Picture 1 (tube, helix red, strand yellow):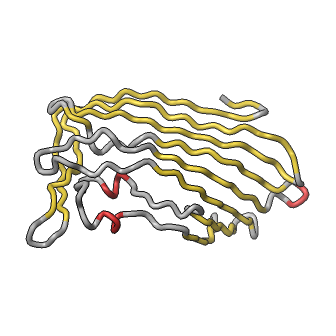
Picture 2 (tube, one colour):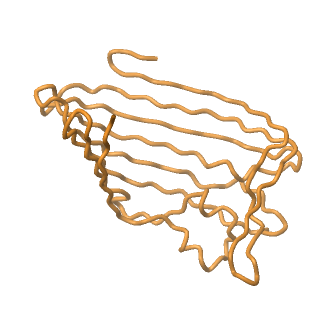
Picture 3 (cartoon, one colour):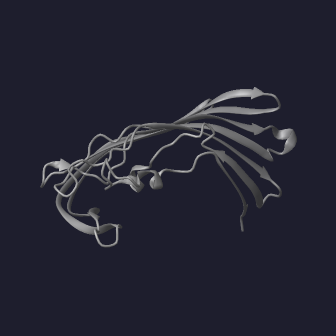
Length: 203
């Protein structure tokens, strides 16, 4: 849906697979100390869920336009042949924030966003015999500040300050397959407060 005051989109899905290919952790190699992975075929898999995103235009203040942004993604996956959760499915994730874009008098040349991201704890894990006590990534919330400046119509400078609250957290895709007692778990955490800057040129 698209309106003068904002827009939204909603997708609901229910996917059923045969011979689904998933990358599985085979555990830690005793000789090298490294985790090993292997793609494997799963006979019967079902993944269902929903995704939402939208924005609400708040109006013109301080020489520019303000908008409220939001999105959410939920998925539930099962390895139906083995009657266990599908480990490659990520936990519930929600993002919300506010965006500012300078008004027409500046040619809309610059703007920014303050975004909050929350990811739920990963509870549904298959816990195979090779890893009966898998690490479940805890819930986390991060705060990011993003900005842009259009130097020309084709050249844009982008900058960002990420994880402003210095949250300690793990991404499920990165930590998947580790054990809860793994002494090296901290190696798989994401950066604390960090920054990036880049330039984009459009042909």
